[in-house]
Length: 339
Image (cartoon, rainbow, N blue to C red):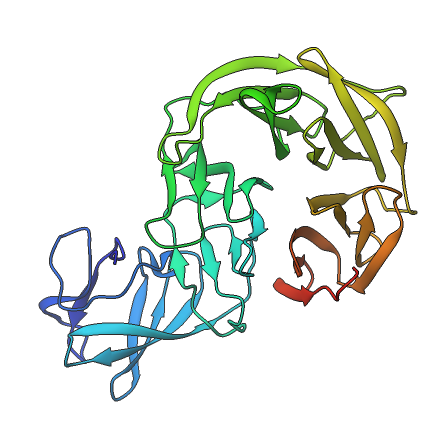
């Protein structure tokens, strides 16, 4: 278990200082204890609203209700109050657990559930999968961009702060592939910027310290100009796909660079996000207020759902999650057999 790194001091009913610390971490002294949940990091206040029941307000503006457990001298979070204003990276594991920015929720958690696991680092762009249960992506750790990797569990997700990580401006996502065709060679971690700049880093499968070195810029050569990009991922081990101005563009290897081999659209708006799993491509179409799933092989539509201005999407097995940017909430779906 980890502790919340912030301190709430005790005051009397007349707001006079009283001895002790109700909830704290930076000082190293605890009267209260709560499992790591970074929505109450640097908590801004605590108030008793009923005997043994407290409201705690955190730095991000989310309020949590907590119950005092005298036998263990700790606070247990009961429910979360508030929307999800900044989704950051949204991802799924094979059990349907959801990662959103710095929090991990279980599949069956509802909108009131505190996050099962909280992280001090914050994922800020769509990530890539090393396998069905392991992701790697970009995060900020203590104000610096870094690479985070791991599984959706406490003590299983890691991020080491890097002193300097060269990234393109306005990154829209990452793609993970092997250095050479036929899944040979080391891992390559490509980060794509909104203006089309792409930069590649060498990484390893050491989840605690994956970054090795910056390999510089690579080129995504298109048959016709692409002014702006909104997403990138891998279709398969040899094919990269990106979204640009409402079109899905496919690229094949061209040495260390990538060259367009085709593009398609289903009447998408200009801003779309992409996620792929098991031969299915999920598209969050912000302007058309929908999330759709397509067969990768022939672009046949398999499923569609209405979501208000979705800006993030993830798919893993039979699970799909999208971010409703109007309602500032996550919407979870289960794909039926055959879809």
